[in-house]
View 1: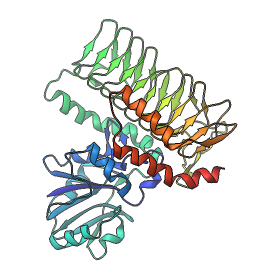
View 2: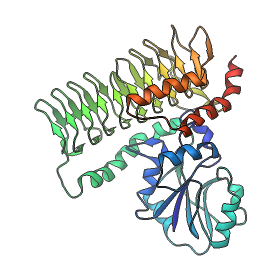
View 3: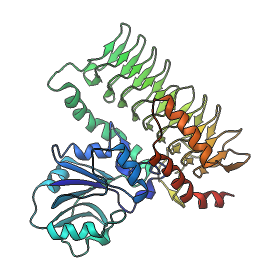
View 4: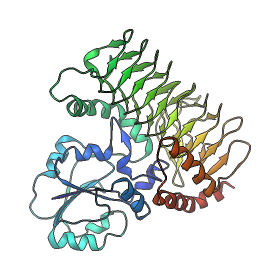
Length: 420
């Protein structure tokens, strides 16, 4: 059997975080959605199905995994927006008689196809997977949770951190009951030590306080916690990430691998290779990869009237029904020093934001400027900058990624024109 994790027709609701990544590579808790699914199918051949614009780039990042190819006569398709539950995954993984599609309401959860039905299905599969492709196949309703919008990652993040702790402990520690395997210097204060996991190669310097009273704290391999930082769980600090001196990282925060974090961070998700390493507040926010927030960038996450927050996503204004929501920022975007972001601000892919006062609450991809004026960020100049940034992490931009920059620039041009 083959396991295929796929994108469905609702992927665009997760902008601006999915311009340059499939939905299943979003972080929630201490792992990506993809990793949460695959851990239930150990030893099963994996393939990925993404929208055509991401196919080439996804292949470069996953050279050993088939992308948009099905090569077996039996395949279990699982929606990449799914937050997998153990009982649900056990149910859909068990053998079922014939072909079947599992739905939660009108959303496809998973499908198991065989033989001629699978062959016909793959012949018609030229884009993302949608319900119309499964017409005539028996269906069954199940209960499931999905990431529908970017802020759902924040809604579920604490629960997912709690769930992921068990898997983290088994992966890194095995049957070893010693939770602290990294180097913890004298003068570190570990509160509720049984819920603190510090991996091999991690360093925690003097004066650090790690408080797991409200939930576990995971410090992944080769992470470095500088002196006098404070971390209050549940929190995940990714591989090789630096938490700077004097930082406060509060509950519900997930910091991906190879990040730099300072100042105050609360209930935020930061994807790999992003920097928020200086003073300033980031709360109830999601940042993509290769983001850099300048010193003293501050992001509001609560309206003065304590009302619900609306945001603009994929051309629609959505009432999130959330009282707390800060900045949603796409990959390769940056803010200058002393930038202020209003509650529920959305900044797209490769934006360069600067200037006095609050910039607009919606900044289309490739925006250049701030409150006083916004112009279009030239795509070739944005690629030049991105190449320099990647080189700082010893990475070289692939031709596929450069093509993706041009594609995103093209599909977001209408939004920039609407903003004038």
